[in-house]
Image 1 (tube, rainbow, N blue to C red):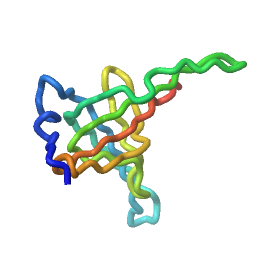
Image 2: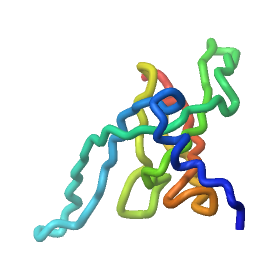
Image 3: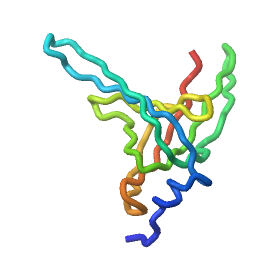
Length: 121
């Protein structure tokens, strides 16, 4: 087992940043219909570049796509059937959690999540 515990670094205000997580949960109500509830949570973590911003040019125009990696002790969700993928708002942009990797060997609850830039509507 690795001896490095990164929990202190993830919480250090010199290194960590704050972001907002929007979590949406679906459940079947008493009437048999889907009920959707959502909550917004303020978290702390370290954001690093993943693929960065990529301008994709196609015949009909162009679009910007990009991704970041979020390192945090907050348990982010890509999707588990009842919960939609978390949406992270950071630096004025929204990102959808695409995958979550368990790095708890490097600190209690530590995860690294790849997040894709939400397309402009």
